[in-house]
Every structure is written in structure tokens, then in C-alpha cells.
Amino acid sequence: MKITEVRIKIAPESNNRLQAFCSTTFDNCFVVRDLKIIAGNEGPIVWMPSRKLTAHCPHCRCKNHLRARYCNDCGRPLPQDVLVQDQTGRLKLFADIAHPITPYCRDMIQRRVLEEYRLEQQRAQQPGYVSRYDDYFNDCYNRDTPAPEPAPKKPRAANLPPDTEPPRQPRSNDQFGTGIFP
Image 1 (tube, one colour):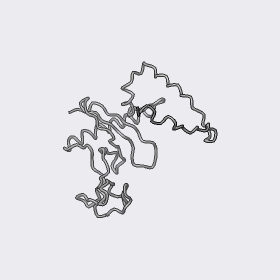
Image 2: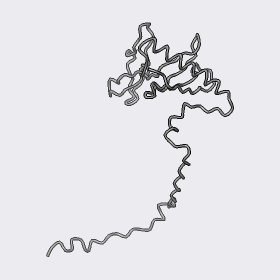
Image 3: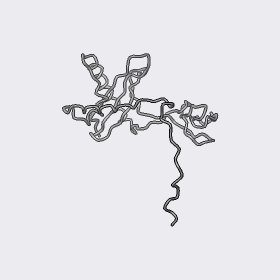
Image 4: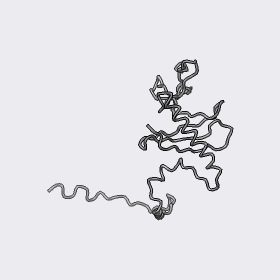
């Protein structure tokens, strides 16, 4: 298995530990998006994409993230004893969506992503820099073809106040049932 492409989007400058987002392509046929490059105590580290863990409301069965105090659907208080802890006793609030199974694979991904991150930091210093991270949606369009003309706007009907409507004539029932009986 080879990492054939890595795209980096450097996070805006802030006091946050998040340094960049990343997408990684394996063997030109499988993409993992939303990896995060985080400032660790010993340098940047790569976090795999994850989602918040959820639990069902005991009343309506709606899913809510584990730290929620009230149900998103019915509004009732949620029990707080459903929090899961890992082996070290820390609360487990997220689950990896995709992750390497072996230390070798994790090291390979981390080395390649951090190498590309350093190169992207250098590219970002150049004038006219544009991140390639968001290119996925632009690849499906031919850049040589001009964008289509926007559709002309439909004329809007004038909003008439209710009292300017013409009065309605009551229907006559004189011909009701005509032709039914011989």
C-alpha cells in the first residue's frame, strides 16, 4: 500500500492546537479525509478522523452526544451515567472513523503527512498561494470551459393588498342538476 497523494489545508492562525486539516489518498483509489495535524508536546502529531459517540434517549430513543444534558428531540433530561472510560480512566467521547491497525502503518502515515505539512507551510509563504485541499470539487469541472450563464431572474408579481382584490360574485345554483333527470 502506498500513499499516493496528501493534501493539506493549514488552519488559520489562532491560539488553538489545531494546525492543519489533511486528506490522504492510498494507491490512487481510496481517500481518507479530515485527518488533523495537532500541536503536541513533542511536535505536531496526526489525528485520525473521528465522530462524537452517542447514546439513545431512554424516553424517545433519539441519538444524543454523550455530554448532552437534555435530549435534542424531546427535551427531557438525559442520564449522565452512560459515559464510557478508556483503559486509562479518561472519558471516551470520540471514536475513530478510520485508523491504522499496525504501528508500522501509523508511522508511515504520520511521516508522510508531516513531511507534506512542512512543504505546504513553505508553499504558504509564496505570493499567490492557494491551498489544494479544496480542489476535489473543482476537478470534476473542465477549467477551460466557461461557467454557464446564470438563469435570468423571473419577474416578480406585484404584492397586492387583500382589499384591492375584485369582489367575487356568488355562484348561481339555477342550473344545478340540469341534464341528470329525463
